[in-house]
Amino acid sequence: MTKDKQTRYARKSIEASCLLLFKGYSCVTDVKNISASGILVELLENENIDDLQVGDVCILEIVVNETFNLHVSSRVTRISDGQIALHYISIPEEKQVAMWQLLGDHVHEVEAYGT
Image (tube, rainbow, N blue to C red):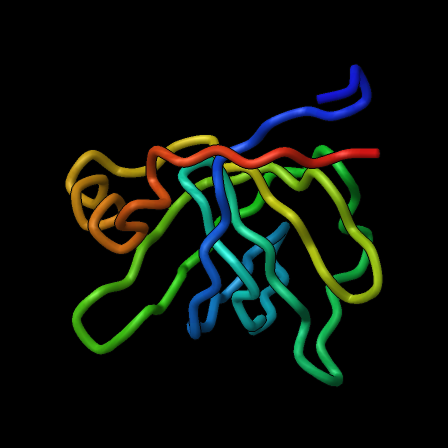
């Protein structure tokens, strides 16, 4: 691996929706992928959040299915092309086991990224 490459927790593609809350604003997003440390969401058509910037703290309500949803605090790490990457700040203790089960083998896997 070159010095420009880094590692991160492996991402898992899932079909889920996510309500993103920021400074009194809310919007519905689609989950593109999820990992043990963060999530990538895509804004739905006609959705936007004014003034959202890298470093801002948001609340996410991730709805995976009728029996599992996850409420987490997160920090924006990247915004581009209608997609928002967020890093979890905290996952409630009572949801951690369910989160690890959702991720399956991805919970311990890492992958290379970067240029």
